[in-house]
Image 1 (cartoon, rainbow, N blue to C red):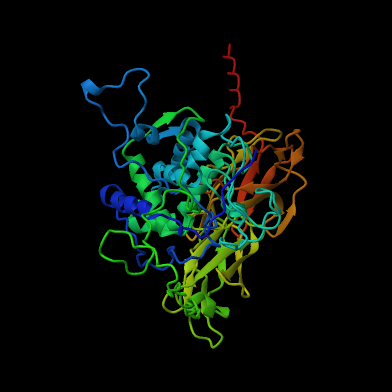
Image 2 (cartoon, rainbow, N blue to C red):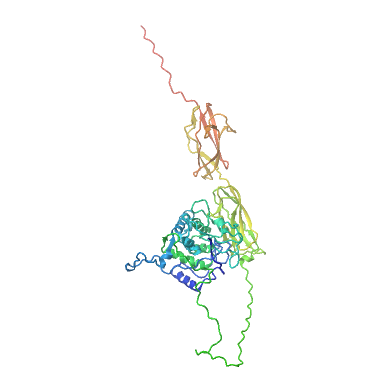
Length: 576
């Protein structure tokens, strides 16, 4: 049976005064640098401005339960040591994370430590987000492979008290072909999962309902934009980009600090279940504000009933004066009319290299005035393995004071040819801007033999030494460069020779041209063994690479030299 999050009035609006007080207490005692107000952030960082289209969850509802103020796993005194059957304390129970869920978080941390070491992602952050997003997959309701036993879905993002995000996956993940819904234990919306999804358990499938896939995807999502999560600014930016709410930030930071103080594994399906929700008005309410009433006498005695026949009549309340609806002030995003190129140079890089130029896009009003502090989304489209620095296909950057957003550096893959990077405005539908980037093949400008030994052979024999060359480009190793080797007729005739030395194919047949060759990581290329037919003479082997580097090697086929000496003449017989 599919479980759904309930409807909410407004993200964070239903947070009670009790919860707010608890957050403040935890902020002071547990969470690092947590405040109830929004800090100014540097360009390129997320800010809680209400924009939802780029967040992982679409700013869907979350659990607001806070960790106990006491540290997890308290060490009881000898006189208070728990015995078998003694209930686990609240602090200990809250610190327990279902075994499969905990394993997924730790494996994601290990993978990110290798792929993005500068991010410094702690698994406890994934645990904190998993706690507030789904209660650790509803207390660990997952199968042996880490897939939730039933789907965890947020509400339809139909704009009715939520963000408006129309269907992007034709209902593939959320079963809703009209609006998107957050999916799985880490609550990704389908449009985010489409580029952020990962295969964390190696089964060849990217499934947002699988905790290994979802935890790894969440780790990569938090580590994009070169954020360093060991810094306060990087940590805040990453969390706010996941769900754009200061209350959410404070709640996650509280659980992060709690888990850092200690946690332990519990069996799947036995984790504690949260109860408070950001879209729930039915829970504990703050102390109600008294309703204003008429002035009453100071005495505590009840007022006598009106005298029968009295002319006193009930007072008719005055009609309230309607408050005019204020005209909303346009946001910076509302003022953007167009995107324009901001001086981007030609984007070209060799396969495997970083692009030396970056994309710059300007946000402008209809009058051409620059607009600062708006988000520009850069998306790599088309068939290419090129990425932004950090391995992502999408990057969101805030425009600076000049209204310009500079995309992260592009990294070329091995696929050559052109691809497109599209710049679009986040939060408003205006025409995007496309940039063309080109990846050229790897090249070499120099080839040289690694040995000076002469290459000789007798007719019908094989050459003792194999030909090995090293390729360089601008003096540096040229790796993965395509090459061709051909036995040619003459220095001025590159036609394939029909006699003399030859290679053998897999079936032992004569081959005098080798294609599909490539230098290794050290720029080296070692050719197969060479053989000689019965023709003697000097022959040429020509090796060429992409980029025009060419080397011609001499091969000599000659009969073996006769080193034996002539027999001595017989001595003359002595005379009689």
